[in-house]
Length: 156
Image (cartoon, rainbow, N blue to C red; front, side):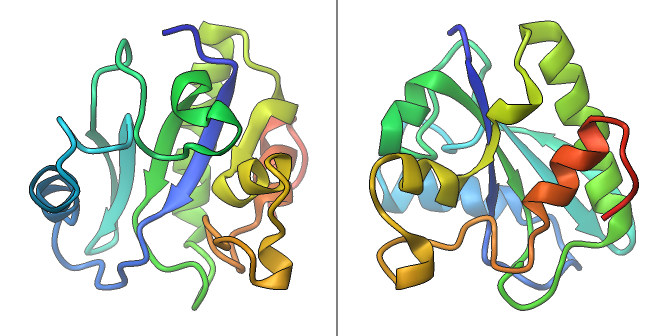
């Protein structure tokens, strides 16, 4: 796989007390019938500790966003949480920034191609603000702030 984009998601879960990656993987495999979890990586904040969980192999297309062909064109990263209800913790954003930066460097992906799932929907002609599509990675997820952090700007 030769990714052009990094596509950011949220899980719509909210507990932050247990590792949700296991349950998400089980759901994707057993309920959705996929060969593996849809994301390449997941970032979780459990009891105040932010960790990286490995999803499907980097060499395998994702199953995280079919719009604009993103499953084949991007790495999918899910930040565990429901960011329609609250923004992600700053430590989680900084962790995500550091991880996405490494991907950008290793795969020559420009910051403009670090997108949220909803932006892939916009590319396909669906507007989440009009209720036509998902708000993923959440209405309160600071995508512009993440891109600013990736360019060395101030915190969101």
